[in-house]
Image 1: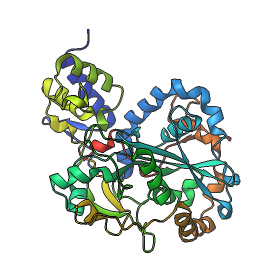
Image 2: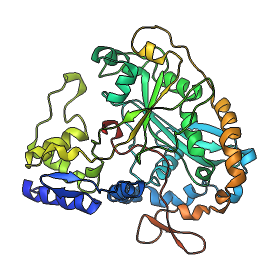
Image 3: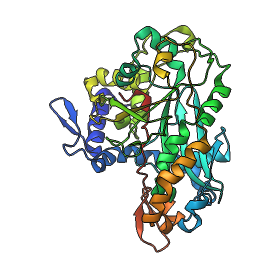
Length: 407
């Protein structure tokens, strides 16, 4: 027998206060000083829960996975050559992708719908540089839709040509060399674009009953910690560029994506009815947003508690010079920029990587043992070779659990 509504309500309030939210006047309020440090703290409970939940499946592989993380002395900036490795299900690469994603300062979604994941490996030493995850976008995103000029009908017809980068980022020591920007560039390369098209060109969407007939023409992403530094000034001359289009409204589910979510889902199955859907989509709740909203309302809490108040910067990356015209249905054929991964890397190498390597030597000091997650009692604390405790969290831009619904 599960808990009743009053018990669940008390646990939700306790969890929110533990994360750092203030519950007052029937609403939740984030800390008044919402700098990046405070945002990380708000995610800490969910992040720790994700690490704890993953421990059983990954801890026995950790020593082997750490062998694929470079020591600072193994990285020679002049010799770096990135290589995109598509992640296949149930593979060693998938284990490494999952392990790297656990180091982000906020929990990362596993993506949903159509999905493509990559490891980026340095050919010069066969060590992991970073990860890229692309998937289906949120259906309605005001800033994106306004930038395109969509109405509801054209969005329904053309949304299949948009991808969302739900995770982008470099890992240390490469993150010290601004390789987060490189991951963002590689994510919008023609190599990734064509890989996605080849995978899904014959895929008939269950929801939209559409078959992909050209590669994606737009990639979207959001910053995780307010205003982005990774995507700032990221513009390839005469080609792809990251363009700011606005901020999210501050709604989402991450603050319920912790150890309490199971109890919320169990309560929903016992007491709530899923919203009516098209028969071919299957039965059950639409998504986490629907589950949490229905439970909140059922136990006497406003669904405005889904407003966490963290506004994420939204970026769009057109992959063709006429992306907006194509997505509005005004033109039939995209005019691709078509920059390959190596073209983008060559530009990044001269523009960002080498200048950073000449003035910042922190990358040389990185010890891969400091990347270990499950040494000691606190899963967010590990120990470097000197025995000093260090907190290993990633400072790259990324998207949260169920990021597609964070609006």
